[in-house]
Length: 402
Image (cartoon, rainbow, N blue to C red; front, side, top):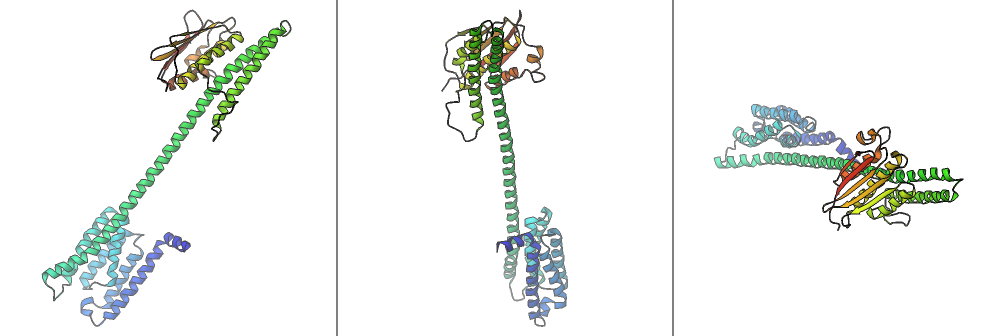
């Protein structure tokens, strides 16, 4: 049964042709039954039958060519009036055509069908009046005959409105789906950028510490084995810390994983700056660290941003500062913001790293700093300082921690 239903939906003209044949058969029976009895009212069957055939043909082709079939039906109505062929069963095609045009046809055709349908009953009573009926009765009959035409048009127009509404809903759903996909892509890109920044900060800082310690260990391996052993221990600890942070970041990528594992370290915050600076001092970079103002709870985004800025700044100092370079870190709590100032007295970074946003794969640390600060609504300034060296200053707005 379902296959038959699907087949009929795919071939609507076949269905319409079937009903056209049925209508033609009913009309033929009707014409033959009244032949010779009411010929004066219906006209001769030889004239009425061709009109009936054409009207039934409009039923078969109504969905393929609704506007043309409407004009053909109107022409057959005029022919009926001209040759005096009274209303017959085939005239039901007029109702079907009016419905079809109102549902699927052009607007002009719909208006034309409505006008013709409303006038059909009146024209019929004028052309073939009832001889034994009063004027009021003729008016009532005309109104009664007009109702089916009006209902056919209203039903078709309602179908048109419903289809337009459903099409609008489908279009809106498709548009919302595209917007959701676009938002998902933006969210994925933002998350990938965030994880890339985290990985860069973790890898760049810890690997730079390990490289410095490895070079130092190799230099004093023969002359000061105790210092070499200490450097190797620092390398080992730094490597474990880097692995732990990378596992935490990779854990974010695992879908459906919500439970924390002991191997994932929490996000760094300003309280861990002491450990970070101690690690830098151990690696051979003298760092002066001061906190001004009254420490207080900070939003987690500001905590992480402050830590990463200091981490990246000290990493850049080791990379570009040169030998015998010292650094200073100032953490200042204002009433409405957190200030960061990281300076060194080295030779500074190349111009393209802080002015042009990086070249040949370089400068991503400063780009990441600017992105981090922008995400929390802060400001960042990076560049050489007067007298030599490099300076990074940032102001991060504070909100009360919940």
